Image (cartoon, rainbow, N blue to C red; front, side, top):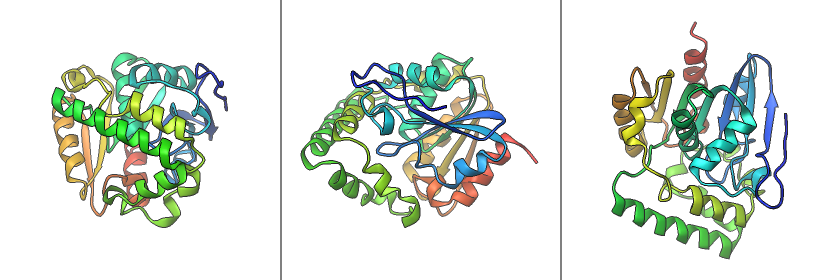
Length: 258
C-alpha cells in the first residue's frame, strides 16, 4: 500500500507496506522518513504486515501540514488498525492516536517518546526554540540542517550505516519547518493527565544513556496501567538504530512471546 500527498497539503499521508500477518505501523522521528527504520522494520516484516508512514512534513508527505491531533487522524486514515510503534516525534503522534482512537491502536510501543511538557512556561520556551529551528532550516537548507542535527550529542551513538543522512536530506525545508511549528514538543498539548486512560498493552523503550527520556519513560510506566518499561544498556535516544539487535529482540519478544 502506497499513497501520495497532494500539493495543497490536504491529501493522504504516504505509506509503504511490506510483509504479511498482523499489522504493525511504524511512525518515525523528526527529519527521518518511512525508510529510516533499519533492521527493526526488516525483522518485523518476517511475520507481520509492516506499514511505515511518512509523517506530516516528511518524505512523501512533505506537503501535508498537521499538528499532533490532526496528524494522528491522518495516520489512522492511512494505516488502519494494528500495533503502533512510534519513535520520538512518531511516538507523540502514536500516543495521541491511542488516546483519541483506542479502537485503532491495538498495542502501543513508544521508543524515546514523551507525553509533552506539562509546564506552560516550558512549552512557551520550547515553541520559541522550535520556531528558531524552523527558521534555521528555511535559511540554511535541508542538507546543512540535517548535518547539524545529526551532530547533536543526542544522536552521537548512531552508527554511520544507520544515520540515514542521505535519506533525511530528501525532505524539504518547508515540510520540516511545518513539522517543527505544528507538531513540535512546544506545540503539543501535554497528555500526562490522560495516560491512565490507556487500556491497550503498552511497551516503553528507552536507552540507558538517555537519562532524560528514561526518567520520562519511568514516569509514564507508573501512570499507564500494566505498561512495561525496558531500558536498553549502551544506547541513547535512538535505541532502535544504536542497538538494533537488542531493540528488535525486545519488540519482537513483546509482540510474539517465545
